[in-house]
Length: 52
Image (cartoon, rainbow, N blue to C red; front, side):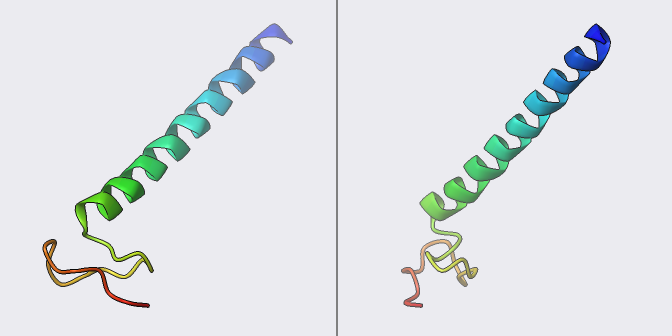
C-alpha cells in the first residue's frame, strides 16, 4: 500500500511539472512575440500582434 501511495504522489508531481513547463513555454512564446494573442503564429518575431 505504501508503494502505491508513493507512486501516485510521484505521478502527480510529474504531471504537474509537465503542465507547468507547457504553460511556461506557451507564455514565453507570447512574450517573445512568436504568437499573436489569439494563438496564431505571426510571420516574423518582430511583427506587431495581429488583431483577431
